[in-house]
Length: 496
Image (cartoon, rainbow, N blue to C red; front, side, top):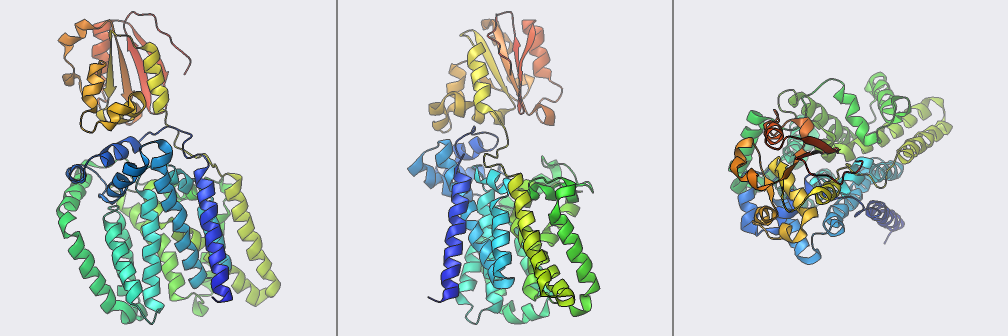
């Protein structure tokens, strides 16, 4: 083993270990919530159940399938289910480092890897039982194999790696199409790359298309549905070009955001030195990995809103690598003109970027939802003669996970368990049997996602219950749920 290989091995092991430590510290400290219960619940079903889910789910099946086998071994606790995405997030740093090391320099590789490690958004996704950390891992691996095919004499192993990774990518998330588009764009627009790998890439693409054919119909249906019905994300505004990117700078204040300042200086110097451009084709592709999907998603979001830090996460390693490339390039150009000691400036800029990332790091970063607290409030205010209504239906899995874990584990039958306890999942007022309400002395309404006005936007259920029971009292206003009581009983109401 050469000295360089040994140093790389030590650095890689250290980076992965650091990621695992940082992202494991508070893995089970907050509620299973938001989309996690949906993912965990359906991963419990059979593989055939997962297949049936695909027609209504906005993500392909890969993560559900992996989680299906994972929870058979480790169960569905917060720690066990989140440990899997935490591992995906931690091992993605391997490819961030290898790309930076091979195509920029070791300093840029370490710097980009640490920026990735200290990112709150990455920590948050590592604490979320969803597909996104797998998406990042596969994207980073795909870009590494793609670059390696270009500069390797023996391409076979990298071709196999690229093909397998891209097939998995397409079955991990719909936005993987941006990764394949980017790689195809490079081949079409850069003659030197086209000459080197066009045959290999065509072969790889044929295999990917063949492997994706069984899912193509579902993909087209979900694409049509997204275009026709829209997504939960807002349409683009020009301010999002800056504000969304700050999510990956740990939401630094404008005056502290060295990342964007460095990129501006980088662009200015590139403009004035364009005739003596020192960037390699690989470095240009690293910049493209960040900037092309970002701008393309921004433009598409005027029609189909897809620009959000959550969906942007697959090209964020490219952003960190671009920041470190900018620092290296700027210092190299200035050192040529002002002397070698100017390279110290690059060290200072890197340290400052890491300092500000660490200044605002949140090792217990979460999205702040409170499923367990909702259940606590219901238990404190529910009697045998209380009817509980959950609106909209997709909040019911979060509620069930914290209310009755055994009901949650009974795949396909959890609503029956809730109904036995006078808890009903409803979408509109038509779902409520008003004649049945005579059996209850009061009712509780859990109005989830009220701000988004997705379900029952006119609050017809609330008005009907108020008319039926008379008194209405607001028990709690939480960040994802309003809880109301209707009826005359004395409540054990706390300050929430």
